Image (cartoon, rainbow, N blue to C red; front, side):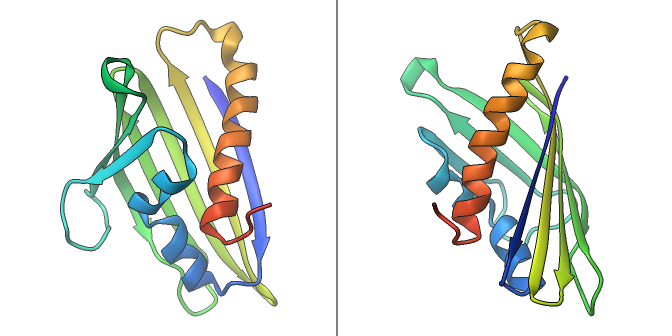
Length: 146
C-alpha cells in the first residue's frame, strides 16, 4: 500500500479551507483527464458517494469513493473527513483534516492507496506521484497555484 501525506498552511479561515477541499466536483479541475460525479445533490456528509473517472474513452477507469466520516471545523475545533476508495482498480482511504491556526488554517491530506495490478514494490513510486498530483490539487483548491 502506498501512503503519503500532504500539508498546507493557508491564510484562509478553516471553514473556507474545508469548503474548498470537500467540494468534490471542483477537484477535477486540478487533475488532468478526470471528471467527478457526485451521486446525490444534497450537502456532503456521511454516506455521500462520488466517482472520479480518469482517462480517455476505453482507457478510463472509475474510482468510487464514499464519505465515512464527516466532522466540519467549528469554533476552534479541527474538521475531519475520511473517504473509503472502493473501486476495482483503486482501493484504500483518504483522510482530510482542517485545523484553524492564528493566521488561517492548516490542511493535512493523507492517502493510503492500493492500485491493482501494481505489485507492492511500486508503492514508493506511487506515493511520490501521489504527493505530486494531490499536492497540486490541494494547491489549486486552496488558491495557492504555483
